[in-house]
Length: 582
Ligand code: SF4
Image (cartoon, rainbow, N blue to C red; front, side, top):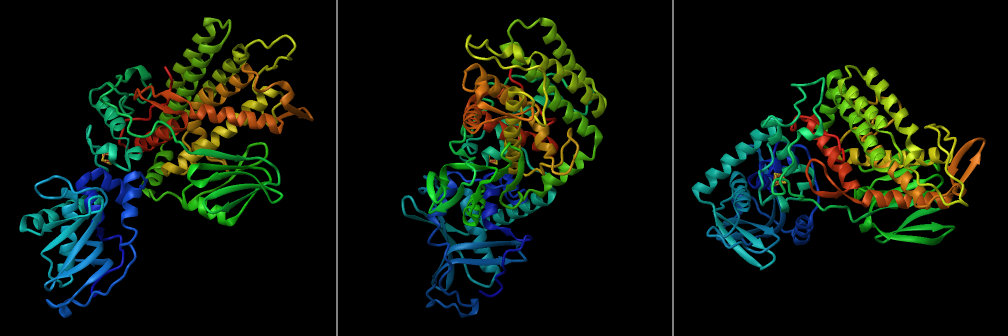
């Protein structure tokens, strides 16, 4: 087609104008921050487009089109520098010398006087304007609703044309502004929005509202002492809806059989030992793949997993994260730019570090309070005082000292959370935290639990678009996922330590599940399997979010907290609120 242009970042796709009319924030997240997520609507929409997405048919030059010209072309790209827009028209038809863009939509035609929703009318009108800008006549378009096979005619009236031009200018101005619009307030558009889990509309609005009413902690106003979580008003049920699924139904795959290989057979991931399939899982049901030690994976499986945005984590046999095979980095470069700016600002680093450490001490205290036998009230008072001291710290060095004292106190009393074993069972000895190598079974369990937790944090960080190697509390060191370690602090007691206590108290793991070599302890293969299962059970467990009041799994909480950290760094919410169970 003459004058047609290929994709250029300067030209705004008509599909994006549709998103802008639906919700300016959705447009910004998709077009500027390059966020993308699939929900049922997106998948069904792709299915509806499967035929028209194959380019085909001939479109003559504008001057060659007459009233006799018959055109039926699919997936026609048209653009205009003058309009600053482009479109891929699903189907282009001719009607008495003019071109008619036909836009395919999933769903049924709405019962509206205009025949179609405004975002769809604006989108097809922009397609008509683009055709005109390329010299063709076009006075109307058609929206084809696949569910009821209805064609709705949309006249390009002067009013619709003027509104389309104005909205196009507004959308371009918003994209250039560099500022994401706030979420819609309690809109019924959000539950159907594919980016609801990225946007967190009710959550962000709740935190912004709390800030505006003076109830939320505002970092700039009180940088030296972050108010406690109780300072946040509890949301009403109507205020914060849980708009994303409570848990991810897909599962993490762990392969630890040495010499095993992973290959692909159709849409199934096969785990093989010496060529024999020992296990198989459908790709549709996988959310991450963990390979321990000497496990091979085929290039074909790696490519397919990457194309589905499923990360593959390569760990040493002992559980240390060594490599990640993931799709190309998230396209939200703006977040990484702000992350680097924030990490270069000592005040921001200190404020976030206090949030992470404060959350960790509060959760450690809570775990002891709930599970410790014969614990003196002084221990709890000491931890409460250390939390307050952490929040008063004026430098990372002093915060490190406070965190160290709190960890010593906590681990000194850690064994009070073990149930007394039956008489004929040897007890677990634990006199304090040690590592590299762990010198007793409990430390071996703790180290393994932390290594599993850090890779979960890394996955959450990559999914949100952070650089996981640049932290605020943990300082950069070669190969250390410092930001994953930062966010992990508040979850160490709630997830890792809690699983350790559970497997010991339930008798799932006993001292005979360990091997000792030169004073270093490690789990035997069956013990590792049991521990991984307990860890996954914990991640799948529903927990009430202390700020938003709804129930989600811990794995979902990791993602929510990572997104809140991103929103805080982008300046959308006043500050990061650590996850602290009440
Ligand atoms: S969730 Fe709601 S506010 Fe957020 S982008 Fe979607 S429609 Fe807009």
